[in-house]
Image 1 (cartoon, rainbow, N blue to C red):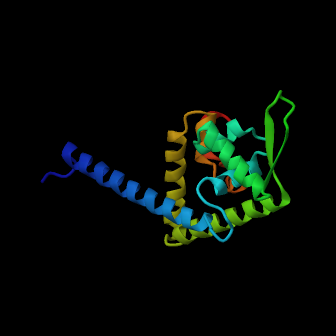
Image 2: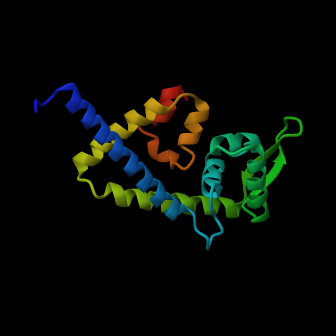
Length: 181
């Protein structure tokens, strides 16, 4: 077998793509386990809704639904559940009949718990790498994230469960940079 042929390169990318897919699912599973806690009553889109509203308060149900990939009726049901749990309140937005969603104190506390659990789960994974590998992962993840970000909507969707202040710094957030935010 001659190394470096087109066949070898295709196999290499195929294996890399396969491993990336498996890793993505494993990370998603860990994040779901870390952020969805039945004892807190949080499941499905609720943790991401709380984090999104913590970073971007005053969103409409429609905007929140788009960020979370929900239908309008699904977003209304989500807002109803969060409001009934005392995590969110609705208030006039000043734009016609549109209501703005904002977190209550209890909702802010829950959002901070979600972020702490999320961060612990991903730090446990990143901790399996040595510092050089972690730096390489940061560069590769930033490049891939920038590459899949297509517009503001996709940027908000990609970062719906992010601890956004962690991306502040000299390099900034690759997702925001990809769409000029």
